[in-house]
Image 1: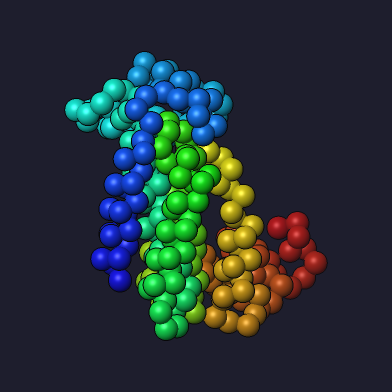
Image 2: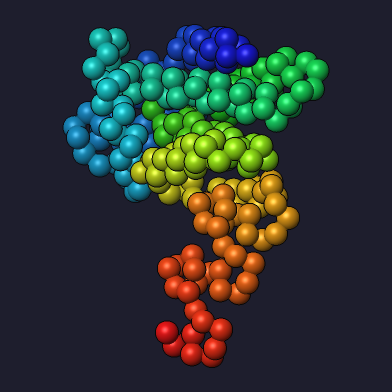
Length: 234
């Protein structure tokens, strides 16, 4: 239920804000806190990879009339973490499908994740990790929606979730390039959930419709080889 996702967001955000670091801190492995806050406030570039997307969004939080500059950056981590928990709940609820008690199970699991020591610690300081978890959760949610659309043979939904995955992937790379490590798992997931039994299912899911003969790859590249041996040269 959508109201449960909203409730999880609100509850976790209230707890995170209540335990939020008031300023720059070295606690909770926050050694980069000062570097990030200084770069955001001055318009500079923090340590590699620079986190351009993180820097752009935190500029909006600097406009909030609450606390110090560092507190506002910390607040962005709290909001990102709470959104990640809500997205995780929706993912788990989708995985449990029609099983009894799926809302309770998904909510309980999301709360366990939300208040696990490591994740909670990153939700209360100026760090990039909470935002990265949000992007990863959105990526996984998009991949799951893509798989569900393939199973239901819904071409329109397939295109929608393709866009979601690609947009989140692009934004994720603009934050931290390690998000590309999800791609191999994503391809395996799509391949396993493809609605047809032949190897061209993934091509179809990507908008390609290869034929069953050996020239499929050429056609997908705009080349249609002939049956004679000179096709390679052409």
